[in-house]
Amino acid sequence: MDTRERLIESTRELLWERGYVGTSPKAIQARAGAGQGSMYHHFHGKPDLARAAIARSAAELRDRAEAAFTGPGSELDRIAAYLRRERDVLKGCPVGRLTQDPDVMADPELRRPVEETFAWLTDRLAALLTEARANGELDAALDPRATAAALVAVLQGGYVLARAAGSADLYAQAVDGALGLLTAHTR
Amino acid sequence: MDTRERLIESTRELLWERGYVGTSPKAIQARAGAGQGSMYHHFHGKPDLARAAIARSAAELRDRAEAAFTGPGSELDRIAAYLRRERDVLKGCPVGRLTQDPDVMADPELRRPVEETFAWLTDRLAALLTEARANGELDAALDPRATAAALVAVLQGGYVLARAAGSADLYAQAVDGALGLLTAHTR
DNA sequence: GTCTATAGAACGATAGAC
DNA sequence: GTCTATCGTTCTATAGAC
Image (cartoon, rainbow over all chains, first blue to last red):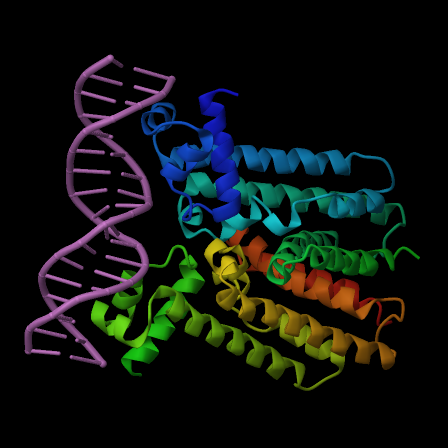
């Protein structure tokens, strides 16, 4: 991995762990094993590095979700597989946590990937739920878009509960609760 | 409102808007209209002020939730009323956002109120769901604790979705989706 | 490409006058 | 109680040598 690459990966990790406000160029350099001059040679500054890091994290989230959504099983199975996929629950969501970062939300370039990622994810889940409904797998009375938003929210809120409790179990509990509500409509 | 009080309220606002890491003593003083010496006379420093601010925000969340939970209507009505209560959706949850603050989570004294608040809220909702189930209002197959965790998660995740989209509608959608799943079991 | 030197500002806190 | 002065550190970035 070259220096430029290490800088991006270090920034991704630090944005995940400490957020944008809590991450200094100095900390990024230290983790990447790169010098001051090196960092400012490859990037214009902290916002520029964050752009690269956030874009990559957003793309990764999307790819991993799509892998679950196109996996085996019924639509509801694939949604459950996505929600129950192994995650660094206690670290939180690398994209979702950015919504709490005032400097990220204030910069349109940093904010856009966050906004687009959640819009895509909700759309994708809504499409799966619509299919499931068409297949008679799901109660016709349920609104796919609202249900999709609820599922994404359970995901994001599950991270919050888990971090508050200091236990990944809380995430699992929230997901189980949501899937319990969802699959009870299968019968 | 005296100086000490203004300092606490200013800290609450800034923790809400910018988080612990993003809030400086200088910013607190400016918002409170208090001088440097004044702040350090009333409080030992930034962590001490944060303790007071976080404790108050946690207590407020609890009181407002309890008001909804003891309101009129069936158990499910009261849960719906709590979820749909008017909120500063785009500002996020003043307590939940602290789970993303590394320095808050690292300090046991700052973290405890956050942990306790969510434990209390989940317990309280689980108790209401248990009652609803006993009254035949809710499907007996649903686990009250898991369902409660899912509801709290929808709340917290709804804030994330709304902030990502820049629109409070996303919060409402997630809540509608969750209540759609929940109340479909009523029939 | 990477290094060191340097810069002005902000950070978080302390000291001591009033 | 509140003020100003001061402190050492960190922040984010630029300059220029190598």
